Amino acid sequence: MRIALISFTEKGGTICKLIAEKLSLQGEMCLAYGTKDRAADQGLIPLDKPLTKWAKEAFETSQALVFVGATGIAVRAIAPYLKGKDQDPAVIAVDERGQYVISLLSGHLGGANRLASVIADEIEATPVITTATDINKRFAVDVWAQSQQLSIVNLKAAKQVSADILNGKTVYFYWEGRLEGSLPKGLELVDAVTLKSKIHGGETCIVVTEKVLDSLKGRDRFVLQLVPKNISIGMGCKKNTPFKAASELLEQTISQLNIRREAICGLASIDLKKDEKALIRLAEKLQVPFITYSGETLMEIQGEFTSSSFVRQVTGVENVCERAALAGSGGSFLLRKQSLNGVTIAGVRRDVVLKFTESDV
Image (cartoon, rainbow, N blue to C red; front, side, top):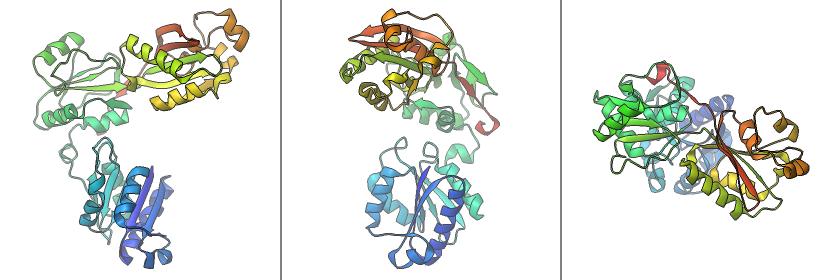
């Protein structure tokens, strides 16, 4: 995690430096700032710009901001740059004597609650956490989703889930894959038939699926969809394929499979295509890794594949897209080889196990 820290007094600078050192030992990347007249003596970076400009840059480049000073300073500094709980970095305030560590912003999705607790442990301070699910020791769906690499589709529904759990209501949970551990208090596991009746009855539900949910129509406030990253895409193409051709086939595939793009966990191909600009750009657009494998590795993948003598002649492998899709994750085919404008694609659904632990309760 990239963390920007700032202090404004001599005492604050000492605490700021201590926190940065402690977090750096845990592998975090810390940049600690102090006022011009004191920073050099305290081993801090001199602040050479207005605080509001520093805060703007930190918002854009860091995953967490730590203000060592009054909470009012922190609030005024970050106020112009707030976007939303799914976009804002974690923001923490620590008093200059290091007595209290306050989670101010993005406690769950940004990780401010966790980071505040870590800092408090390291400097022997008291963490101040005000999130309702935390102080009442109830299941926090956004924290759990993040731990399971599940994308939250609708944050309004996440708020409804938390509200119902805090109020003692049952939230119905659907997932067709494997589960480990016991469901937290407030959740009840249901099958597809029961889920449908609960949704139509206006009950609050959590649905974990990569599929596009077309039938909610006004009920999405009460139905939280969480999307697992369980779809591996394999692609092959001619040399210097236009980006438009690769993108068009991918969009066609997403529509054909009726899946959400958040479900794609990676784009894979043969190492002969490691510099193929269209595939690299496509992976960047999807915000997933672009992984390539040697022909020898792809040939070791077990299974039945759509064979092409031309592809074998060029690459040494009779099928690139299907083997590459399987190589990244294993699983089962959702889509066998499809072709369009010199581009091939295949999709694999990998097995995902969702886990609940005692800390989720």
